Length: 486
Length: 106
Image: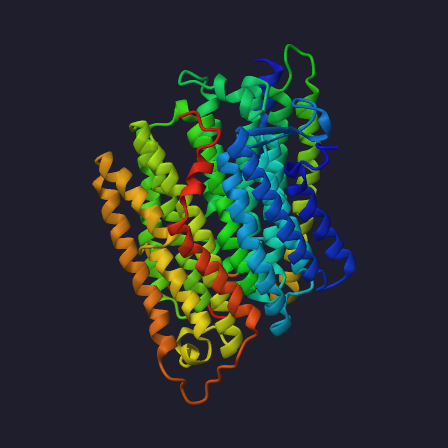
């Protein structure tokens, strides 16, 4: 009976169940059910976090079968941090989406079922303990995400969805090829079995597999120069979808890259490869920020900001590779903190942008005048989220960048410090570009309508969470350390 | 040359052909077919490398079965999107990639 109440499998079953139920209920139905169910998922994730703090990392054999024949699920600190982030972002967004689709019904028909499947795929991915199960969850995630990009219909979203689908399929194809090579070499796909087997003298197939899997993940995470599919997909979808995709979906593949790098393929990692990843991250920060600054559409600006912020995540690799353990732990904490802070802030930013677009009736930064007067809370949320992205204290983004900066200085890699500072300034530039416009008086002929309260408050909750993370982030880092050897 | 290696090399060749098709062919139906060829290449490697001393290992067979189901679902979604794009634009290809710098308008 205690097994039945275990939170681990329910985190996957629950979203799958309500997603299916929402589909059966009919087009556009199921929003209230989703909000209630995601709140329950949040409680389950918290319960799991409590179990981990008390008694360490956990393994769960689905159906009692056990690995090789059955599927094992695994929860360690890193996985549970990502689970908490997923539910914490999804709950305000579900509240937001109910209000958003009431005001702007385009795309509401299939939003709830696909969101349920998306969350099930995310939770399953974070809890997977073998490479093949990860492949399946990656595909589920990709298909649900592509469906969400296309739900609004129209040439631009469908084109973006098609491009995204081809990119994500190529990414998982590369992953599966890597899995095939690993299975051919070691006869197993279980992370727990493989991790002690892989050493620096492994046969050539293993580094090749590592490179293929990592390349597939970079394509799916939209790291520069693989970012081409992201801005149209994230910028063209309805606001709740953009928020889910930018906050969570790209984090899932980043999480896998992190796991491969720090655990499975750790003996194979080289400083040169880590510096290359860092350089791509730096290029993403600069390129994404400059392009964000050049956009005239609000959602495209926020989407390019995601391209830039993904870059920060990858700075963790050079800072955590072949350096003293303390610096590596600080870099890991900073990178994960950045993932969480960006998840919350970017969800808030897309949600606020969506409210502004609903209010002004168009997606154009040039016509934001009057928003500051009519939607002060929404603009405040946008600003708070901007504070996190810039990395100003006391936000979560500040803690993240502080940890990364500390690690960079400790290991003598000053060039990453320069990149982070320039990136912060560019972020400030594009955030203020929006704020400046929004504070201008309303231009003649423009309209700024009021939006439902739920839209304003859910975006504000997300933005506030991204700030509070900086003040109360310590328990999260404590949780992150559960199950890590060092 | 062992049978396992032969399977693996054929699979790698199929993967390369599929990859080239996916990247180079502008026609969407060809891209979707290329993805399927790429997938078949991976399945062949998985099954080919999965046999030990001539005895067949059932685990990769099960993985390939799962992979085929996933590939069918992905192909169906890709075809549905391609069909929608055909209805919307009258073309079975992705519109020219607009330069990153230019703002995208509907």
